[in-house]
Image 1 (cartoon, rainbow, N blue to C red):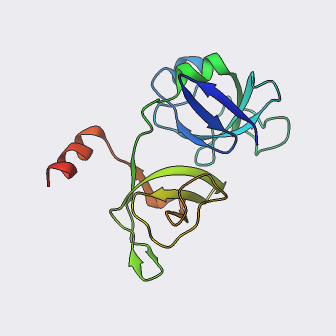
Image 2: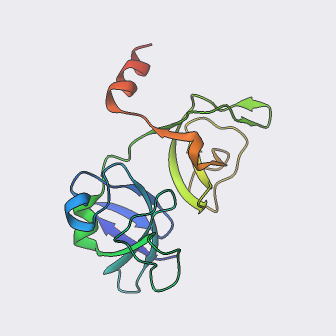
Length: 163
């Protein structure tokens, strides 16, 4: 699996990242859009981004590897400028039962998109899941519908911690 190091963090092919507000002017990608690091060239200089959730009119298809209007190539330098670096937390926003346990309201991080409707998340809590092929902690990862996950805003995270 190919990796690239940015700002002290190692990103792997398949990782999900969130675009920041600088993305709009650099790649026409809206802030808050989740994209997958779909491909990383052998030198680690060019990264193909894939948007599983949203079509972006000015984007391409990563040389036929993804659907039209879903892919865009960036350099490592550009990627470092346009993604959020805080590994923002997410939560399961819809009712999902996994092995008899309700996941709604659990905090998680995005691990990998399986397709445009399904993704692996790593939950903070052990739920007898998997490790998403080593991308997350063993027992903490489950596949959930993409539309069941929402980003926790910083103000929401603080109010949840206060409870």
